[in-house]
Length: 179
Image (spheres, helix red, strand yellow):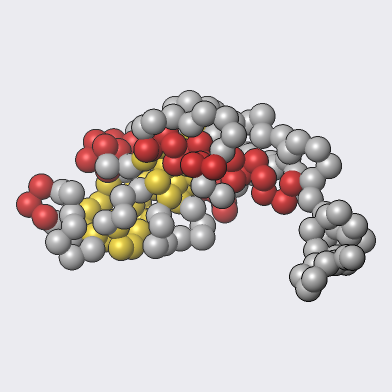
């Protein structure tokens, strides 16, 4: 569903409008409350190998989304925050080398031909996300809400069907109707 069809007023700014739409989609996922943080500690090997930046708004870190491209993003481990990286990125490799100060992995970024935001049009760029103003300025931040609760009982459960008399479908659908 699009934000254009929402009952409550939506913001005029297209980026805010898209963020509100994404938040609404997250609220509806499976009709249940979602766990919006990672249950593993930051020093767990699975989290540590994908850590590319500390999250300044929480006690967590940003990790490269394990589902990978082509829509590259960083996900916070403690809050419902997502950083959408530029669409000009073709591939990202998390390097074994770490930043000495922040203790997070460096990323090697491969840009699509002719779409590099780096001065001089370099097609590869090695950086730490927290220290790279070029990558940060071309990324979009989406801050979700922890209070995403489903209203009501959720969707159709077992044995609920699609409705019947007076509902959607069922008897009398199509044809000449009742007389």
